Amino acid sequence: MVTGSQVTPEEDKIQFSLRPKRLDEYIGQRDLKGKLKVTLEAAQARKEPVEHMLFYGPPGLGKTTLAHIISNEMGSKIYATAGPALQRSGDLMGILTNLNEGDILFIDEIHRLSPTIEEFLYPALEDYKVDFVVDKGAFAKVINVPLKRFTLVGATTRAGSLSAPLRDRFGLYYHIDFYPPDDLAEIIIRTASLLNSYIDSESAQMVAMRSRGTPRIANRLFRRVRDYAEVKGDGRVTLELAERALDAEGIDSLGLDNLDRKLLKIVLDYYKGGPVGIEALAATLNEEADTLVDMVEPYLLKIGFVQRTRRGRMVSAEAAKHLGVALSGGSQQGLFDK
Image (tube, rainbow, N blue to C red; front, side):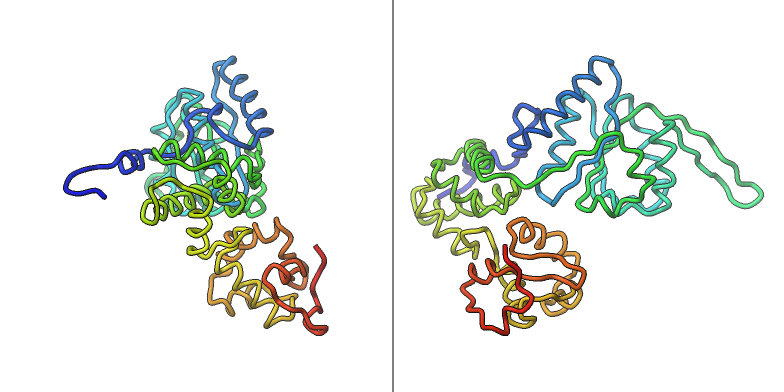
């Protein structure tokens, strides 16, 4: 127990990011790492900025981490913002004019840029200049502002929502997929080391199996397991303590949480396995449709528990089996085989 002004090593370390700083420290996504390494080394050899690149995939898989790694590898500064934060051309103008040669501009949720900002960005990406309009009416004039050569790194969970003109201005596209349990277990062990904690390989593997293929979730679950081990044990994470901690969090053996199970059970019980439209499902769950599409569905689709069809979402017989739901003859309508 900590008393007074004492600070544990864990509390001191938690202030620092768990993200790797270099490409060699990055765990998983081996094919992507190989391609990215060639791209960075080629740009360094030519002494020029990296081409504009787009990372796309489900949330929590390392898109922001890779943007910072690119900045570190290229020895340049990174300026990070998000699509919804850029509402006026003046917002982007201030950022662009402060970029130096080779700097990285990272825009998260780039699919949410407004059309006005997109149009303003096009000449900056192609010709490294922007046309800024000052005054109005008869006094309006266009000022051509040259920019230094920079690299735009975009991140999105919905690559299909990007407009074609914006998508075409990226020279490099990288898809980030879910991580296998072995890579997640390695990430968890690394996180434990950074936080001055301990977890054995068997426990790390079990936590990894419940992490939905996502490093962000793996690190979050480890912190919950660590807290449980410190309160209920001696601080060392064992398999028994890890299982009890995750069961208490409502995370089952496949990594499904309460919202996942609720979605599956509603489709099975109310809609006889589907198909059901996402809007109807969101209304029944009292959740936003975007929350289901971006945060819940990707993993359920990955493990084959949900299928998207033209008529709506359908739940698999394997999902029903996992939930222990007995399927009557009528309720099997709409179910598909995994």
